[in-house]
Image 1 (tube, rainbow, N blue to C red):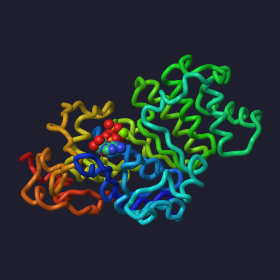
Image 2 (image 1 turned 90 degrees about the vertical axis):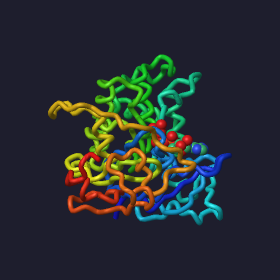
Image 3 (image 1 turned 90 degrees about the horizontal axis):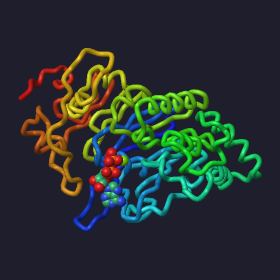
Image 4 (image 1 turned 180 degrees about the vertical axis):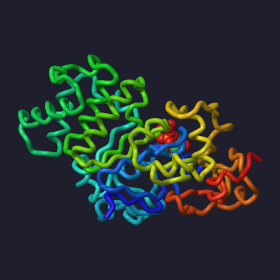
Length: 337
Ligand SMILES: Nc1ncnc2c1ncn2[C@@H]1O[C@H](COP(=O)(O)OP(=O)(O)OP(=O)(O)O)[C@@H](O)[C@H]1O
Ligand SMILES: [Mg+2]
């Protein structure tokens, strides 16, 4: 049984102009201890998907379809509220947050309250969900600081006395407070320099192995995913474009969007290639393009792509691709028209 099973999840935001189709028919699963990279350009719906799974959606969010299962239990279905709106979170989820599923938020580095010591804020997080004494909670904080590599004399410092990297590690420590089985980390290292990024990701990976913790790492940086993930989910304009084992997708991508995204990242070990950015911009999600949402920017687009939503094609190599021409794209037989 997968740890997390997301089936056809569709989330919309209600805005003045209509609906923002932020997440559409998203399907993937995650095994215990597995890491999935969720990648895509800015604005493609990665954070809303993470919030949808953890049910931290704002008031104007509606679950329009789909289901989420965690350890076999259905934790999210649209019928939970009549019109698709959820309370802060469902009772199923209330029991899981922090203990089983925790989230590192995008920009979390700046989420500590500046007027309290960092250690005290983490102690609070320990004690909110567990009846333990302050001393016991402190013991856990010391353990966690060791785990994420912050000297323990830092526990009594204020957020402004921490470097960016240290604040980020402290946030990771906070997410680990109750040894969750799943962490959703939204851009956990984006604001940091490359060396610090590497160090933090290696630490997270070690912790994951030690505790068999699964992770969804949300990032627009493909190289981060290449280093840490088992699986990859490539998202564009609210839809999953390609999904599969990282080695399959990296070796032989079958989706023009994935290929275009990868072409923008350097490969340190491979041959030297010219980096290319994807021409154009991601579309408005209020009125997304008909057919394949990537067609206006796709160098392979044909007439059918403008009209019909592509099927999610399963390829012999293992991954799935939302493209009418997935086989041809994978074989390199589409030319550059
Ligand atoms: N509360 C909201 N109300 C209306 N629209 C929203 C809301 N939250 C997000 N959106 C819209 O949903 C779409 C996707 O969200 P978002 O930009 O957070 O995606 P993302 O992939 O996480 O991007 P980034 O890489 O910049 O973090 C965007 O068009 C955004 O404007
Ligand atoms: Mg985001």
